[in-house]
Image 1: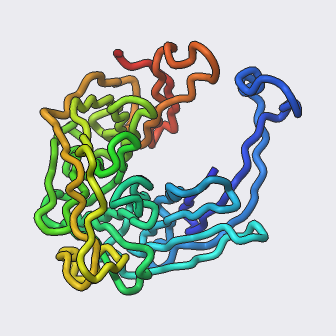
Image 2: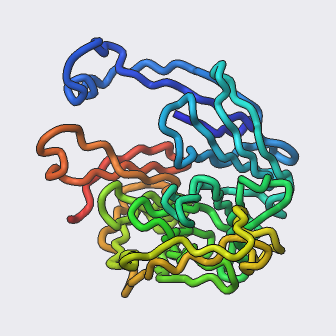
Length: 331
């Protein structure tokens, strides 16, 4: 478990069942509600201003904790990539203190299958400057080598970034402008394509994709907690192959904030797939919170045979009243 806190620290914990036996069925062990929490490592990553570390995300190529990378953003507008060392400590490997002009709220690694299989090296970030950016970590964040920067679409700060686990180049963003948007992240040229959008009546502070379905659980602040359904998908062309320019380089975009344009050996846009979509819609709304909804995610439904047929569970939380609610959305 990775935690970003108001003191500017990123901390790793191991969470385990307190009575976990060495052998036995995992689903049976996890029904025990008593857990132990062990701190593994901690590192200060926030700087300037309030010094808060506002968001942390696991890398998409983390097979084990020992091979883990994390991306962290802070109230100073900075972006940092952190790795777990061989001794289990944390260290910053890449850093750009001026990634954004104002407080950064959102960070995520792209799907590992995105951008011709190089997605684990692409980091998305969003901030109060209303900008959505994508960075190529292979080139070093201080370059900066950005695949794109969009600063004209969101009407207010970008509060969350959620790459789809089902469609490698589909990206969801939330904003203080109350709108959840789905993006086609393949475009290295401006403007980026907004696939679909829906207004929720409140700033979309957190959005989480369903692990198997094209559904989003969203904490929409004054708009409550909602579930969105997307009827689209990314379709890959038969026999598609990697498209490179003559230079054969590996960085995604060496140019200005509008992204690479395919020259100087950079990867060209990935057009080996198409994204079909006819809408993003609210399928379920939950108004049980007495305060603004600030977090939402899909709950664990168990393991083993029959678990996929169990009802979905959403866990949502609210701010001022410190509420944690568990509920089942409509199918």
